[in-house]
Length: 161
Image: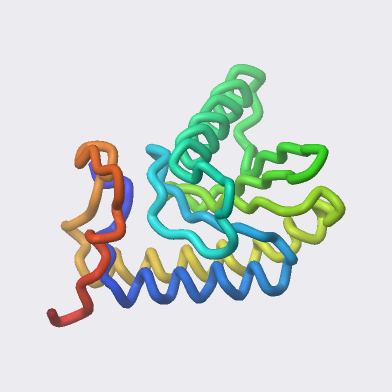
C-alpha cells in the first residue's frame, strides 16, 4: 500500500509554498512534511543545527506511539502532539493518512499561535495530496520501501514530463 500519492515537482512546489506561508504567519522557524514512515518529503525554513532526518523519524514514531496509547485508553481523537522545550518546541500535526506536519518554533512563541496556523497549512497540504491522488489514483510512493537517504530527486519531475 502506498503511503503517499505519486508526487511531481508541481506538487512539491505547492507544498513548499504552503509550508513557507505557514512559517511566515506562525513565526515557526522550520516546517517539515513527513510521511508516515518518518521520511521527510520536503521542508522549509531554518534547519541549521537540526538533524532533520532523525527529527522526521522520531516525530513519526512518537506520533504513532501516542496514537497507540490513545487506542488503548479508547480515545481515537489524537490529531496533534506537542513537545515543549526550554529553547525550542515542536508541534506535530496529522495530515490525514499521508503523514505529518512538524513545526519547530522558539519556545517564546505560544503553541496556540502555531497550532492556529496549522489548520490552514494542513488543509492546503491535504488538497494538494488529493489532487495528486486524482491525477494518478493507482500510483503512489512508499518511501520506507525505497530505503532512500534523500527523497528530493523523486520529486523533480513536472507534470507532462
